[in-house]
Length: 510
Image (cartoon, rainbow, N blue to C red; front, top):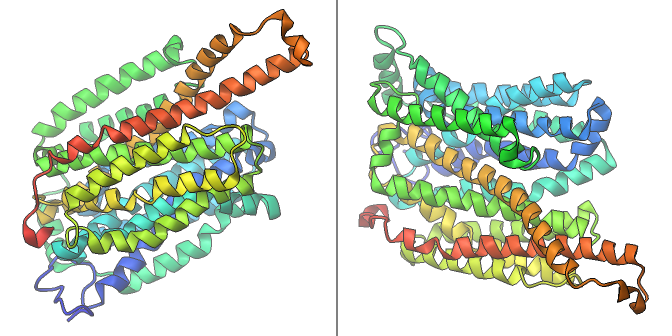
């Protein structure tokens, strides 16, 4: 019997907990994805330092981020299939080992090509961690307790991006950029050891794997090619869109064409293939399809706003990286405190649908409040608005993840987790690309509007024209950031009707 009185072998045959307490297992499998999600934001802070050390230009240095995101995006959607073919525990250990070893490779890289190769392998290892973790949690708990289990996973997804810039800034300022990668070594070793000792490979999954491999591995080569090409180019397209002047760039136009053709072919091919690397048939389940739409926008809102705030505070309000990081961290700490509360009340005290609707509305209102700040805003107000925004995220993230699995056959939990995480990951990438592009357009708009009010007589107010131009530029940039907070807030307010498309789960799966 496990620690909570549930016989994992009988009642939950796909549970990796065996006879250990599933809550202990939930903590064990959450270590590695926290490390991975942390790493997606921690490197941003040290990018300039890395570029100088590696002899790379500013444009070249952005590939340090892009290379990781591309390989991460490619492996995410097929991680469920890989776990079935390789074995879930074995695949998870490979991911942890690959991520940890390549992190050390990043730390000791002396040239840009060495860094990019290490980052590609780091992204391949990191991409499989979150989906496998989520499938293990779904298999370790009965439906009535899944929302509490996803609260543990939610800490990694929501808290890590908030703490990453602080840790990265402190390590870079006080030690060196190498340490943002070296800290993964002890964490990775601990995670690998604990997973090796305490995680089980359920007998039913071993049997399924043997049956699947009878007669040889039926590999969907063309589907794998389309996934790699389509999602890899999509990430490059999103990452370089604003930098390369959008659709005025032949590279961007070509990239977009490749993305449209390859992903369109992927959908047609995978829906008719008997052994697809991406099980797109799961989108025929209404809750799963709607849940993925909502997860896309959760990623969109969380990562775009998380990028906007430190940029605004550092470029326009004069904060240093540490102070700017603390503005994010206060929201992160509030989220950590509320995550267990959200896990406990979801479906028990308050219906999941009502929680999600209220959360989207609250997030939208908080972002609209952020869009009304002035250049003289205090650190306290900035931090308060951030806290108001992110305290509602647990009440969206946990219910959405819980309802995604309602109607999904247990044998497909791994594939469902991979697709759900891919949706959230794509939302994050689209959100960041969208706000970066719109910031430029809105800055040009405000600059043109403000210029209309500038006359040669402006110097009568004691300002030289050069000072007027500087103030004009600063004000245009500031207003463009406010526009982005306003727009993301509107998007959040428009999401609640999607919640009504979700089927109400059975009482036992609430």
